Image 1: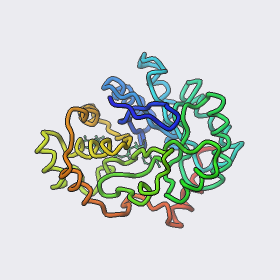
Image 2 (image 1 turned 180 degrees about the horizontal axis):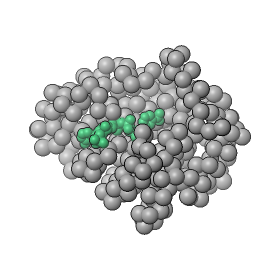
Image 3 (image 1 turned 180 degrees about the vertical axis):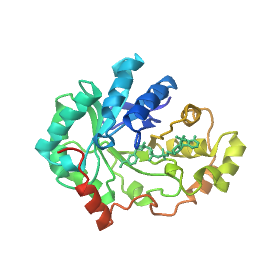
Image 4 (image 1 turned 90 degrees about the vertical axis):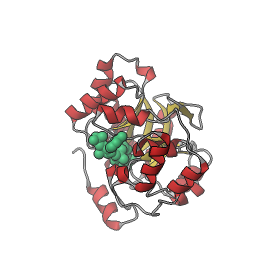
Length: 281
Ligand SMILES: NC(=O)c1ccc[n+]([C@@H]2O[C@H](COP(=O)([O-])OP(=O)(O)OC[C@H]3O[C@@H](n4cnc5c(N)ncnc54)[C@H](OP(=O)(O)O)[C@@H]3O)[C@@H](O)[C@H]2O)c1
């Protein structure tokens, strides 16, 4: 597994395992399976409500804690300095660990400057190895970068061949890496049977999913595909023995729609829904 170095020198695997929408029992079984299949980066969030099961799966795996990169996120309900510190304590307890490797602001709403200050302090105290954000567009990311003492090291955003985030990537601060969520477009738009991806897959004796993930990592992007099938988990990590050529890259680049078909963070309805989604009292 190839690793990628963040701004502070902390290295994380370039492919991780995503756990969105996995209920606790599914999360437990699939994280155990993913760890057995070689994954060493596990992505969760307080709002996924599966941190406890994932903490248990990591503990039961018998793999040393320091060999696994755990990533979790503070939900918008816990935006702000004090609330983020409390939320961090809850995530730590749920995950049964004394530190988090990668702690992220989940949504670009609410008092995320207050959250960031709390996260900088957690970082200074060694409670987190790296800090970052999710779903920040170019302007918000740059503004936080310019105003923070420690700039965000990761922006976890939706990114796949149909939504390539060209605007964000063109303005990406040098201190920040991109981590792709929904790297397989959540299976939508018939991505696994896309003719361009299938053609390239055939050429390299790989699958369409592997072509997409390879396309991401060749651009220095971290990807966290989710799969509840062991065969898919293995497939998604088996992408380090081939390379795409310039023509392949250009063909995939041409698939960009320039917008998301999953979520629009600039839509007032999205802002309202995410701000009112509560994960605790
Ligand atoms: N920060 C955020 O706001 C945010 C938002 C969404 C997601 N995320 C993170 O990003 C992770 C990944 O995104 P996602 O879960 O939304 O979607 P995804 O990884 O793009 O897609 C998951 C879907 O792809 C299928 N799949 C996976 N590998 C496959 C393969 N090799 N061949 C065929 N089908 C395959 C899975 O089905 P099978 O189970 O049948 O394989 C599943 O239906 C999440 O789990 C979560 O950790 C973060």
